[in-house]
Structures are given as C-alpha cells and as structure tokens.
Length: 208
Image (cartoon, rainbow, N blue to C red; front, side):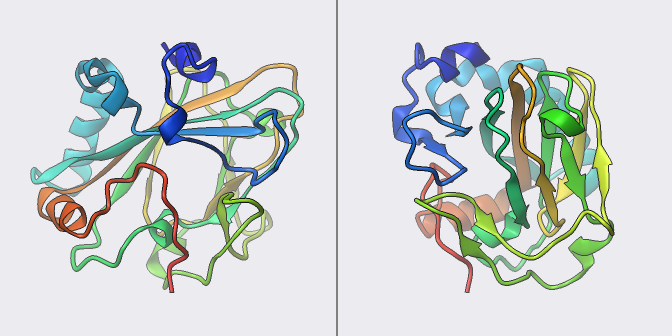
C-alpha cells in the first residue's frame, strides 16, 4: 500500500509535496499528508491502533489521532530534512500535549537518513523557523554535536513531543527510506484546530 502511494497508483496528488523544496521533477523527500483520508481502512490497521494506545498511555485517555503522513527519502538523493520542531507548523494551543510516532518501514540508519533528536529541547521555547526553497520544509538552527541518532529496524518506532528539535541526514544508499508518521493530541485541541481551518492537508505557514 505504501508503494501505491509513492507511485501514485493511489492518487494523493492533492496532499503531496517535496520537502526538499527543489524544483526538480524527481522528488527527493516525498511527503504525503493524511493518507488515511484516501484509504480510511488505515485507521484500523496495527500501526494506527497500536500507536494510539501508546499515545494514550503517554498523555491521557482524551488523546486522539490528529493526522498521519508518509515521508520517503528516495535513493541517492542525499538531501537532508532540516532541523525543525513540529510545533512550528501548528497553531498555538492552550493544551500543549502532542506527540508524533515515527514508524520505520525500512531499516533506518545514518546513511539513509534515520532521525536525530536533541534531548530536552522540548522544554525550551519554539525556535524561529523559516521555509526552505519552493514550499519546502521549515528549518531552524540545530546541530548533531548535542543530539543523538536513532537507528530503527522495520516496524520499530520512536515517539517525540511537538517541541523536540530533530532532523535527518540525506539518503546516500540505493534503497528508499520509507516512514509512516501518526500524530496525536487531545480531542479538544483537534476540535479547536478544525474550527480554525487547520486539517494538516499540507498548507504551511511559518510560526511567528
């Protein structure tokens, strides 16, 4: 199913972008927002169901799925995902509880772009961000020296809070680096987002 999204057998063009911000026809970092809008059965599959249960255990029984997304680093594209905090993409909300579950579909390691995280960065204010290239990813200041990389086997995952500073190196291997992400927050905050027109379908604004 994942590859059907990538090759557009499942038409996700309205939710699809290249996080690299490149004008090239070949996507370097394919992002497809809200795949479960196109294939609702995903919501009942193990990744969504199990990550929801973990998120509730971490943050409370009022936690619900806010959105999901697919991110793939294509082979030999060697393009970084810049340092950023997920909360920079979001509106400010009174209840800050939020977590993303990053699930490795392939073996994720340094050479193909596994995730790097800066410990305790979620305890600090959100940093200034700017947009890369042609509607590419948001970016801020960060570095590997005070961060840790997390290599994952297929089917393994890592949870991080919305304020956690993270990034990944480019994919210099011959294989894809596929990941599926589920994001969770309190139901009341999801209602607040939707009331303000936020549905995570791909429109980006830099947080002031």
